[in-house]
Image 1 (cartoon, rainbow, N blue to C red):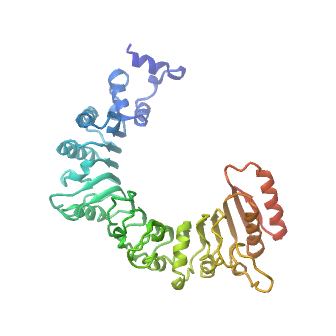
Image 2 (cartoon, rainbow, N blue to C red):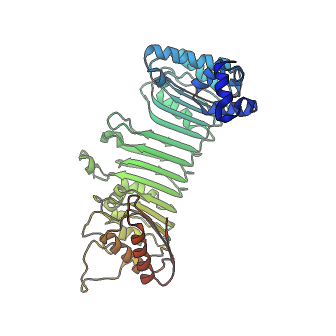
Image 3 (cartoon, rainbow, N blue to C red):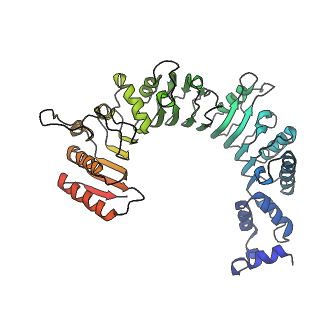
Length: 455
């Protein structure tokens, strides 16, 4: 009996070889494909099980990434696919890091797509020379392209490449408009069933401008664009009338041309250019007011600490958020809360307020939302919190400092509609019992009704 067989049979005190072929195929799908292929060669019992594998993952970095390893990498992929016959493969991942034979690479992509693959992940410089005749599938549902540059030398023929595609992710992929790179981008976005688009461009020095997004089918978009070159943020265009969820992170752009009529939830992490030391053109907040106005119909809004400052810069043109039912925001010791009084006033139907961290930059402009400013009896005025309809208050990363406790008292005494308070303490807190007891006592003193929970 082969050594591999003996090891497998004695694993766990029983015989794994006695399991049905379908179960063993599932097991092979969970281990690295290179290991699965070698196991099928060394073990007689597992020799014919490779065709039952429904997910394959090839990573060239395991071979060192040299030109020689690139050729060996392609050979490994070709041999493995050949040993699997022509069986369908649900999920395929090809991660190449060296310059290899583009023709062979295209044939490999065509091979896996021809097997009815549902999910394909390509990470390689070979994205540069994708050939349309190999890049087509009627079954592909999820596509991820990463770490590549596309400068097509021949125009794409047009039409739909992936009629069943629902999810598209582009991570550090650049499409060269000088040649025909934009053709591939437009073809991908023209997929009629496309619902989800994820774009990540996290290189601060070499990022490209954000491509326009035009699609009537896309419902969810996540964008992370953090280039430090202000020229790359001249224009952001989102023509997505049926979009319901937007997650946008980046420096404020000069102009936002957006169509977000159906938007329900927005998560914004906008950064002012002053934090990057740039004053090349326009205001530090660019055209942020255009984006803020476009999202004013949302039901749920999440803001980073930087976004609070951007909103404050746009205070003079702050729209009404009449549909807003849930507002959550993050705090930072170097970022202020000055926009909160206006934001709460402009959200008359707000019911849930979520705050991640109570410690923020102390200013004279936070108004009566917080306890930063000492208010004398002569200058004291009615808190804007008294008119809020907030029923649920959630506090995360509560540290229990004197300032934080005063802030909690301020919320509990002035939010008259408050029914539930949920608090999550900081992970490294030592005296949790003492903190929770103080908050319970404070809550029951300030409110005759409602409940407090610790999460």
